[in-house]
Structure formats: C-alpha cells, structure tokens
Length: 338
Image (cartoon, rainbow, N blue to C red; front, side, top):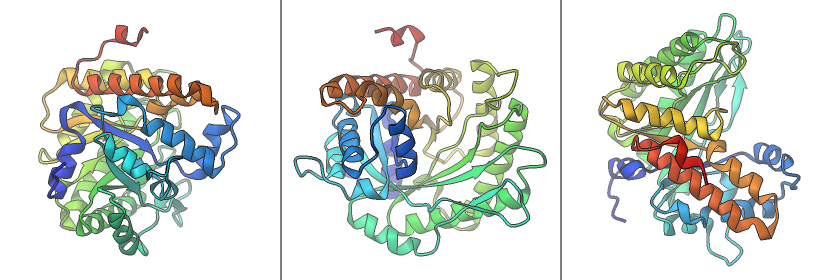
C-alpha cells in the first residue's frame, strides 16, 4: 500500500467504512478482561488472544488500523510472524498507544491529567522503526459536582496537542482522544457541555501548536446520558446531540472521527454510529475505534480454549462487519440475527 504522507495514512484508516480495532489494553486492564473468562493473564495468553483476533477473516476490508500496546507491537505469533505483520497482511495499519496513564491534578479533586510527554520523541522514533503508522493518546474528563474544571480540560488538551505535534514530526498520524467518561448520573445535556468545552479547547491548542488537522484523527466519546442516570437518552437523541456537538466544534478538514465505545454494549455502540451516518450532513468520515464493543463477544466465545478459536474469530468478524455497515449508514438490527 502506497502511503506517502500522514494525510494519506489518516484517510486510508477510515476509507470505505473501515474503522479501528483498539487492542491497546494495558496488562492490568487485559487482566480484568481475562479474569471474567477465567484465563490467567500471562504474556503468552495475551499474545495468543491477540494473534487470534488479528488472524480473523473479518479484519480484511473492515478494519483499517489496529492500536497496539507496547508489549504487543514487539511480539511474534506462534509461527514467528511479528504480530504487526499479521495486521499489515490483513490490509490494516499497525498503531501504538503512547500515553503513560493518568496523574491527579493538584487542587482539582476527582480530576486527572494524562502524562507521557517526557521521552516521547525517543519512544516515537523507535515505534516508527517498527512500522507503526499512527499513535494514540487518551485524555480523561470526568463529570461531577463542579467538574470538569477549565484547568483540567486545558491541561489535558494542551498535552494532547503537544503529543500530536510530536507524532506528526515523526511521520505518524496522531489519534487525539478526549474521553468524557460515562461514569455518573449526569444528563445528556451535561455530557454535551463537557464534550463541547473539551473539543473547543482541543482544536484551539492543535491550531496553536501547528498540528496538521488533515493528518489527524479524532477519537471522541458520544454524547450520552451518564450510565447511572435514571433517564437514558434514546438512540436518535444521542445521534442528534453528538452530531450537533461535533459539527459545531470540529473542523471540516479533519479526515475522520473514530468513536470510542466508552462502556456501551456492542450492539448499542453500532446502533448509535449507524444512526449518525443515516442522518449525515458532515464532511468527515464517521467511524469506530472500539475495544470492548468489538472484542467482548469474541473474548467470551474464546474462553481461553484452543477449540473455540474459529467461533471466537467469527464473533470478531461479525462485529467488524456490523460496524463497517454502521459507518456507511447501512446497518439494520435484523442483521444481528445469526
């Protein structure tokens, strides 16, 4: 595949309804997922699980990029093939998560800033030699009593912009992820407000730092009710409010928006994405960058057993295909019946 610039790479990842498989769970997070199916989280088990995902038939044509964790980008499959080469063989691009996690913000109870800028340039140079074509950095914004504060939002969005510039300087596409968490009992309007404030700050800092928007992808949350809210907004409300927030605050020159699923069920994340694409009226590709919403059925079907590999791969392939259809506005609930 001839990808001569970061603009080409960003466009390729979201072309033709394709999206991103987020397989960049840290080892502790992967451990929790494995605990749910009674599998020990060893390096070999993590490798075997991800190799199984990357060899799934449904990767081809549906997945444009795979976000990896540091351990995974260095691993080889059981037959000696590098996992990142398995991804490339499926027509997808390997990417890498580069942030170093969350740190509490002084004088801002309940709020964090993402760290990892120190030494980032050196790490990016190494990942580039390994063939990583894009990168990801996640900022976390909580909604609660008096939060998010402007201090928290601005600290996170400036760090995202600094990271994005560094990634582009090293020839890789930055995915900027300002995640407003679903945790809490807030209303959809409170989520809209926090999301809008985060996006305004983010694109202001990206412009200030000289980041090329045409070589950038945005990975935002959808505008939803808090998961503990008594009243949950319906699919169309979520689609309309999310689109309104994005159209108002995201430059039209951005090539793609790849949503995070943020704790939504696999089918609901697909339904929301489809509803937005059926509404239309935007210039960017509207796609997916799902972790749990792509992997959950496959993980459950696998259960750590060799004999379940093909069933598990079918589950991932199905979800990848459903989300591609949703990215094209062509998904229907009846397609979930198998």
